Image 1 (cartoon, one colour):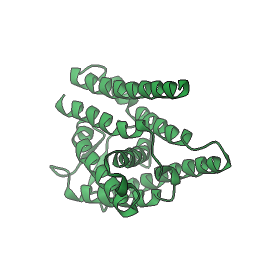
Image 2: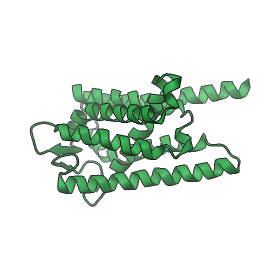
Image 3: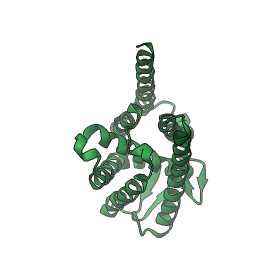
Image 4: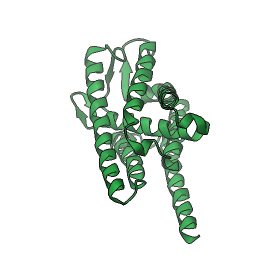
Length: 231
């Protein structure tokens, strides 16, 4: 009983910290204070948030021999997702063939090949949060059907980008050559979501229930982006 109570208290503390960080970040933009600090911390904070979410997933894997292999596979998969999406973004920015014509600003530092290192982490975070939110919202019978899980996760990832785009542009993370975000970007996000979600099915950690922190990270970030947009 004590262990259960202690675990619940730790989870509540993590959720409080998550919403506090996202809410405080948004409030700073609303009030227009600490902007230079916020810009310098943007990249490290995004990498840090993703690392936190990955750690929560990692620690949920069992401690036996099978669990240890699962932990190793999960970390390798996470690293692969970061590398692959960074390469996609590098090609996409250089060619304009995937998402459209866009270029990154110099807010999310450090960069590699003109693409912020934080972007690959952001893709991984969005995938994990969307998969967790799908688990939370979808009826139980849908969670065990791979096609529905893949499509549902991809849809949530695309919805996340729809909300994120105006905030990211306002923050100077990137800019589009046209007057508005092209539909090509959202189509590419959905296709990328399908591919990434399909690739995640081989990682059994993503087929089992994900920690509550992950599905809460989705609305917490939406809260932050919304506050940025209205600031």
